[in-house]
Length: 461
Image 1 (spheres, one colour):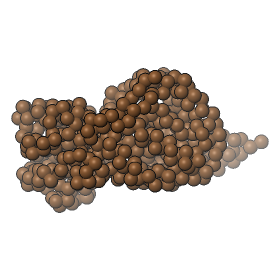
Image 2 (cartoon, rainbow, N blue to C red):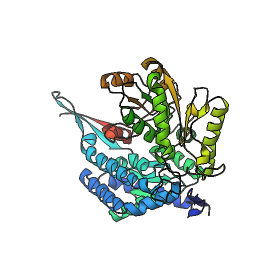
Image 3 (cartoon, helix red, strand yellow):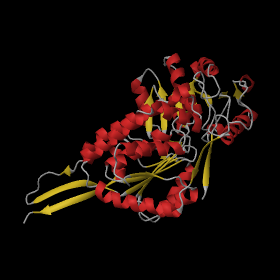
Image 4 (cartoon, helix red, strand yellow):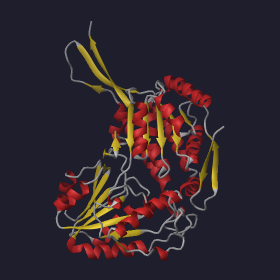
């Protein structure tokens, strides 16, 4: 039996060890999901809502235990870990509340002698592949609406956060969800690909790397099934000269360094109007220097380790390469004793003198580093913000909301903000352009990707 290990970034210990599902277990799960979906799709929407709401109640009741496990699995400081439970609850309850309107039949104007309407039909079995960085909030984006729409769900969580899938299973079991409606499997990469190819899977939701998205498309090719791909970003922020500077620094830097920068919609590039550039950089550096890098189980820690040493070394490489090419690093890594090569702990860094020839301004870093460039105009900022293979979110900080909205309309991103960043409003569509993926989750529109339209054209006798 193949095993998977979760190595905690906290101290390098083996925190969880699990058996991966063998072909027989996968086959049994698929058979249960297909059989359960026949009955679940006929369950009233009100009953589906009650079941999902009971699950949320059971889940949030274990907030402290879930937060501690999250810290040990992926390294988020314990002081911030519980916030994900609140985010999970907000998204879940929002999608439960939106379901009735989103799934209601569409009635057409009267036509003599005919009755015409369109229903939203469930797809069948949804396979959700969730990542480790926000393991509960990314999973819930598709999980709850898939179930509310009448689909059954099989969840495969990252091997870094297997307990997250198990805790969701426990919550659904406590809520009395019928057997087979929600299941989780610990799977190898090969088994994951095989499941996507299986004819009984009707929908795939994947959150992860661009390479992972390519894997999904490759294995789903020719099957003509719905896929939703959220593949990360290199998200920019633009700070205009008319801002409330303290508020802008707080917003942008928190957006860059929360979760040690391990956020698909975190800020990784900052463009600042030249007249305030020096002042912004000075305050941004001061903001970063107050971060405390340390053991994430310590309540005083504000910056935890990256998920694994290889991830930290990747970001170290980006920084070193940029400095060698002429960038200026404002933070002395020597001030952070835990930050050593080969360790998951990495000192935060602010870079100036950067440009788009450097990997740190092009490739997704997924770590506690940000590059800042001066610009002379809105047009220059827009050009640089759009100069990316990614397009998940983009933010404009300005007191002139009309100007900010006009700039936002020209940005190539799925979500655009003014005066905030690194946030997901579940009533808005979550989507990306370019290499940030395809499809849409959350909002009323998210239900369209989890259902198919069925038209009724009834001629009266």
